[in-house]
Figure 1 (tube, rainbow, N blue to C red):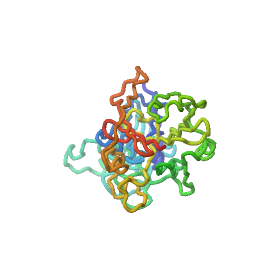
Figure 2 (cartoon, helix red, strand yellow; figure 1 turned 90 degrees about the vertical axis):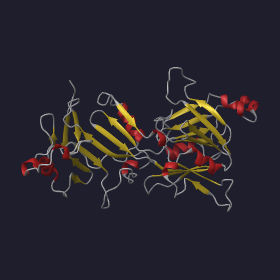
Figure 3 (tube, one colour; figure 1 turned 180 degrees about the vertical axis):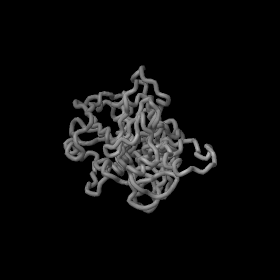
Figure 4 (tube, rainbow, N blue to C red; figure 1 turned 90 degrees about the horizontal axis):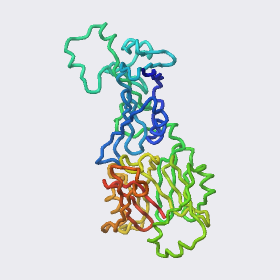
Length: 385
């Protein structure tokens, strides 16, 4: 026996939440949603829209670039596994014993413009199943009674539009209050640090500088980190120009992990200033997917083929966003020659109990930047030092 899923329709509400936040929330609701399927285009995993399918009732569509909740689709209203009770402003409009029909929608929400669906700001009601066209049921015209009693098959919650006209389902979500305080852009300045821009016009950009910004500054400007992790893994020290000096130091560096911003800061245990910054892309299918929220980073610097001496930025404004995290394009931006030699990183080496479909990635080092690249040639993280 399934307990009833009690739902309250709130047009436009919840739209704009991050993929990372929603999946984190669902982990605490496994008694309601025991099975969550993540769907995406494996060939363009870095910028593909993502769909979370919560059997049997929900499909959640997230935008491709910022990974923000774009559309909520509620379907199979009569499926009893679990049964649904649907409310609007404390009025029950659908339950186990009561179907949601057209006349009830118009009585509850009022008049709207004509069309195949009933559309209101932030919510609309469809009388067709996902893959079934109503015309297959016959071409006989509906009587007035039939039209009034048409059963709703899907309820779609979208962002309330501030302008007339429909937006494409692949568009990014307009800035809304649920995004305030999150990073909208992280501009990487090679050999210098990163400038963090935040949603909300009242927020000033934050410049985190290598060798200058302190742990105390991070606490004041970004709040306390999600986790503080002391750096005990010194295996990469073998590649240091002076490995003996690294072994003889009497202090331990530590990480400030900001999972909700998609950023790690490596802080010197001696000076307590930022030594390295790691920005994560949260690419679906990659080993670190869902460990960090996507950080929407950009690279700014002076590539070696920069003839006019002016700094340039990747991605370019006129480039397709589907090149956003493609290794080949970014590598050419950093160095027009062939990519440097790479190191192989296997995320399962340290834990025999973990099994991942694509555990391997490669590390490519450039002047002031390290790219971690997946087997599908997507940049899953950028390290600035």
